[in-house]
Length: 114
Length: 108
Figure 1 (cartoon, each protein chain N blue to C red):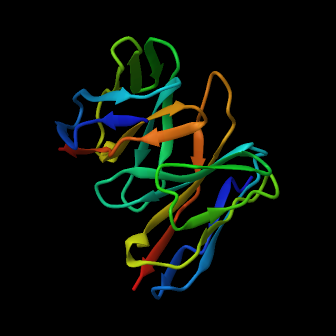
Figure 2 (figure 1 turned 30 degrees about the horizontal axis):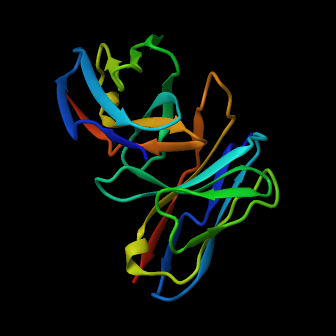
């Protein structure tokens, strides 16, 4: 199993550009989520999905779109990049059961917006 | 909404025991998790508490008191490799929200 994979690992964008961060998992997890991590602020939830075709907003959804057409893939789209979106982005997946909410994280995408 | 508080930094000596506290406010609480993150790496899962009490996994233990909205992570027999950031996270209503993290420094 590859677990959770993310591409690209690094990306530099100019203000106003758009791009899609890719995330895929091969564990057949229903739950997937996107977080951003800024220095000293921990992980903040951007969007999440409880299954194919179902997505919802997290704490900081503005400027980002998501879709979930398959169980495996959960791409994150930046519509018009801004310097405030410079961050490390983590995708995670989990099996949601009453006894565990263990999330498996991808290696992250380090995004710089100039 | 959901919010969590944990200390920003803790320093301890190799071989010692350290406790990292976490208090939270949330609606629709399912459980409290702990994650470890080394510099430049991704968070990795350590433990999950859905019910009150202590959960033990090797050198790490985690405690939850739902009535006090409080939990802690206990690390025993500290090793240099335990130097990392530790995050508590609450899950409720399909959302998992993380605290800002506690940076643990282990000294020789």
